[in-house]
Length: 166
Image (cartoon, rainbow, N blue to C red; front, side, top):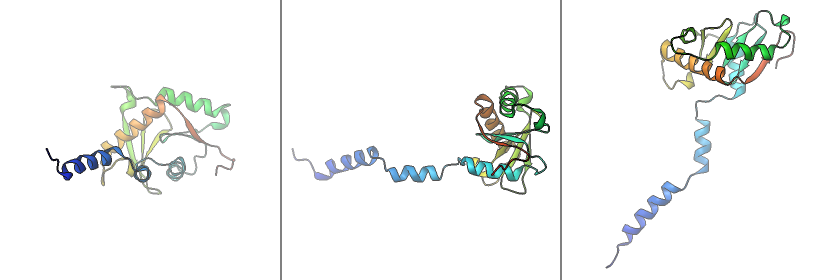
């Protein structure tokens, strides 16, 4: 029995093309991902917050808490985590599911507000994968991000009045 060369080569090429991963492809995929760097997130949030509010804490998924009375709080980090654990997680049928969407003018994206005084979540257009998302889609993304911060609160920046915050 004689086997034709293309019957052997085709399966071998298929095997190798599926089995081999191109490390450059992975690098490109990461660059095209919808995730922002911490520096990008911080930049957008700074532009989103009214400059009159100088005391705020930013969490890794884009939720931040503005403090009106930060000078009276001995440990701002602990207080922010306490508030995030209390008001961040979303429970079905609870007030944490309610939200409002604020369209930003100073930077691209939106702020989603909801349950918890002074607690907001920044949503970047790249996170939605849609040219013209509606407020429901934006709000659900913001609520999901706030829930993630509430479940695992990780602070990435604390902004304090009178302190160089660059």
